[in-house]
Image 1 (cartoon, rainbow, N blue to C red):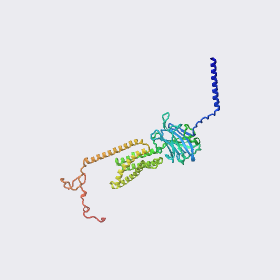
Image 2 (image 1 turned 180 degrees about the horizontal axis):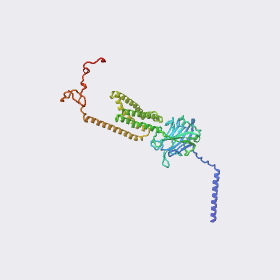
Image 3 (image 1 turned 45 degrees about the vertical axis):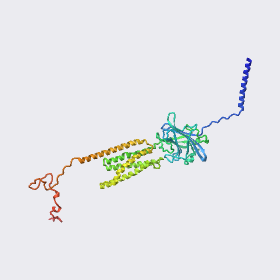
Image 4 (image 1 turned 90 degrees about the vertical axis):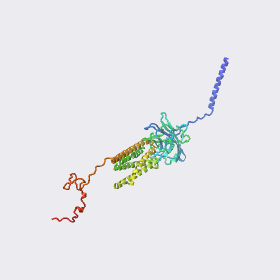
Length: 478
């Protein structure tokens, strides 16, 4: 039995050796399978900016794919803090003729709106529908939407594919062979709401802006299938130029609002009070004229600001039309008041111009105040309407109290004139004849030490006074 066991073990060992030899031989004789090549990331250049006064990073990663007819397609990823009203990156050295990609909240606030625009100058860029851009999501690229990071900070995130950008923007300055292709970027105002699905939605002026360069040779990818499948997350192939600039571009709008609202809330009502409450005509005229001069500055500033925004360039909004009509009628109001005053000084009577001036003034004051509410809404500053409403109510309350006090004072004065004590009896006229019942002394005159009893009215006519004759030539002197 022991010998049989040893024989079985030996046969098993020989069988294992045979199988191992056959496996080795087959592996050596069979052709080697080529390993599947590792898929490489597409070419991309990435700009990263994190040194700004607010928390969060701006990341822009770009892949350019040459197309037919010397055109180019763009694949890009853009992310930035969602606390900014909008963020944008532009291709170009300056805003004029730059292709700008804007991102802001959609109408629901939980997603993004991607808007390709072109700027004609240092003003709000305009949406160009001929630029064919599409937002997409795929494996290996960041998600799209308004997302939150690990610190619960909200940020925009978008991936976009724009086709044939040179044909859509002929004025674009782009060189795929440049190692220092200029770019610009900007961040909208902080904590200003903009939720719109419209790609041509109006935006406020940027709060921060800067520039950088990008190596387009690093960003150019010849394989269109590979492009857009991955983006960089670190600075690569890009370099910042200069520092981040802060630009409070809304300062002009605020000055316009202060000038216009200040005149209609304070200056004009004070002028009305000077006339109705204190009857100071010259002070009234001076105050209203000064207010009109301030309005000239405010209207001029408003027209100058209008050219920087798409919604106000054509000066066809309700706020602008009402404002210009009121502004023109204020000059008519000033002329009516001046001519009425000139005529009144001669005739001391009311005039038709005065009546028109009296009723046109309150109408223009009310129209100007109402246009202020429209203006704040037009400037995307509807929250300011609450403060403005409180000031308007306070102004009207003060005016009504002043009118009530003036009328109350006038009524008391009228009542005092009607029911007050009668004036003292006037003394009798001078007369040479004594009143009835009074004795006359023997000399024929009554002594009155307080006044003369000679009545000048009883002296008769000039001829009687001179005895019926009057000298016609001087007396001859001896």
